[in-house]
Image (cartoon, rainbow, N blue to C red; front, side, top):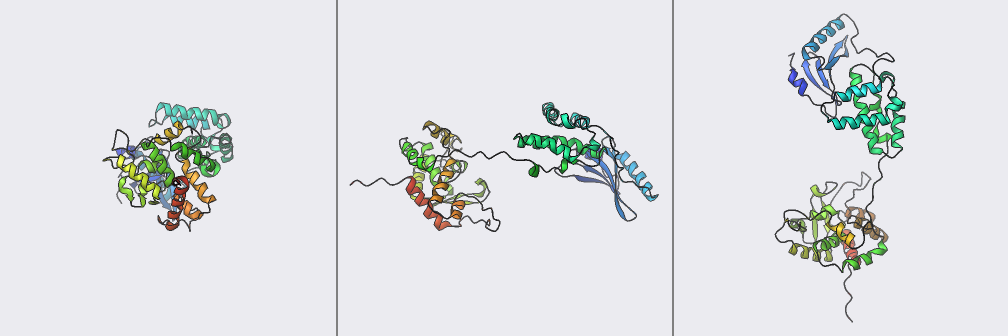
Amino acid sequence: MPTAKLTDAQCRAAKPRERAYKLFDGAGLALVVLPSGAKSWRLFHRVEGKQRTTTLGLYPAIGAAEARRKAAEARGAAERGEDTTARRVQPQAGPTVRQACEDYWAGRGDTTPGYRANVLRALELHVWPKLGAEPVATLTRAAVLQVLLTLDAKGRHEYVRKVRLWLALPLDRCVELEQCQANVVRSIDPERAFGRRAVEHHAALPLAEIPALMERLSLERELQSVLALKLLALTWVRTTELRMMRKAEVEGEVWRIPAAKMKRRREHLVPLSRQARELLAVAIARSGGSDYVFPAEHRPDRPMSENAILYLLVRMGYAGRMTGHGWRTVASTWANEAGWNPDAIERQLAHAPEDKVRAAYNAAVYWPERVRMMQAWADWLLPAPAAAG
């Protein structure tokens, strides 16, 4: 088997990945690159028919030549019947948690000084008061969890995940240096242990106030943002999907939105009511030679501003009470109160069912009912003027 395959340049250039991986030198010797960035020489060999792993030290403190020498010594010791597996750490051995963190982050030259300062400040505030003086060899999962849960209880759900990582990385290195037996921080699953920030819902008017909004909107000149707001209401799509709408996506009475533009990366079909088709005809005529139905005013190669619809609502006096995205909430409320099939409503909103059996997606599912529902919604939202008697 070829040996001495690794060069110093290869060892130095190896970058950390999400999972640990090995660079083999030959004869069972490998450089293991850990997610923390630490690089550990290990010998994988068999002793009396059993697999053994011997830790030889960290790179670059130990270069490839010295690692090969240590590997040869370990093989010889194994042949003599000596135990070459990593020795157990004695209680109180090694640095304290604070010392380990400071040493590790001082050596992270791949990060900016400002980033390292922020990390150490966070650890100083939230970790070291309780755990800083604790030897890494005797640190317990329960003690770490108590500290992190205190931070999580303050509602800092995203921040506590960062603090956990900033503490876990130095302890990965301690494991490799045999200063502790295991990284207890890694055993804390952030998705199970910590909460998440509450989803901020987009402002939406009560259904009873929609007729007044539409009456106020009718007083506006037929600007691009007015057309866009009306079409947004008529189609139940997200604001970004409407802004990015291209003329080629309109096929008669159907708007076919490509999967790449959808939040869930699935093609979505939108039935176009009579009112929606009439609005589209006006918008397309106004758009000139642009590929977009709603191009930017002075840049036909770009879509309209993401804030155009919101600014219109603010100008009309609905700041904080209604948003473009809020039409999805309003429409869903109307459809459910009107007794339409809940599955048809969810498919029109491009939501996938939670039930895995029902989640097999087809863009045209419930299509006939969705066509009828969208026309009924358009007739309620933009009723035809009463005939003069």
